[in-house]
Amino acid sequence: MRRIITALFLCLFFLTFVAAPAAKPGCSCSSSPPTTDSGDTVQNVPDPQGQARRDAPPLFTPGTAPPKVKLMTLKDEKTGVLFYFESDGQHVSAIDKDGTVQWHKNPVEEAKLMGFSKEGKTVWPTVCQAGPPLDWMVKAMWDKGKKGEYIAISFNTKDFGLLDKQTGEFTHMGRD
Image 1: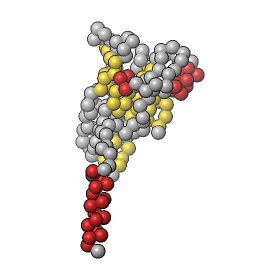
Image 2 (image 1 turned 180 degrees about the horizontal axis):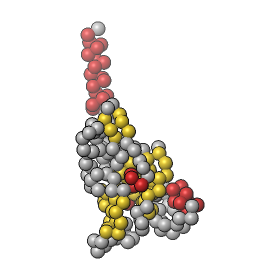
Image 3 (image 1 turned 180 degrees about the vertical axis):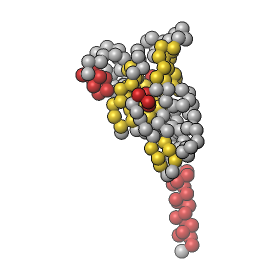
Image 4 (image 1 turned 90 degrees about the vertical axis):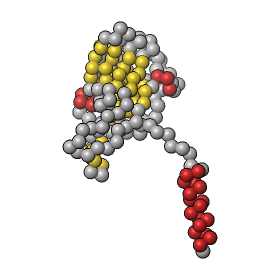
């Protein structure tokens, strides 16, 4: 009986720590969005170069300062504009080639996104992924008469939406 228990333990150990695939660190947000053209046609080809990701912040105890996250940037190759996602995880700025700040926005505040409590700690709404929008997002904006260029962003709270590249206006598209 002791040999059977030992054998089972060794099998579980092997399966758990040796044979299991290594977990990749990263955001718990949606999968990578596909790239899009600037014209009327939208492509469905993933482009890891056109995306930015960061880990979601840890939970924090109410009454303490919200956690900081790594800075994140995304560059628009066509215009040279750099989109800078700050360490609070909520503010975004567009900086042109000359270093001029075009706009500075807080999409969390604009959309009135709220964190939630889990196990007595709070989840701080944080932008954790940015990249090209999905086909249906662009179509939804076109249906509203808005034909601008957008960046898709998603949050650790499972919310997502589009940032207008020209104005920084955030359009909340839903929650996973």
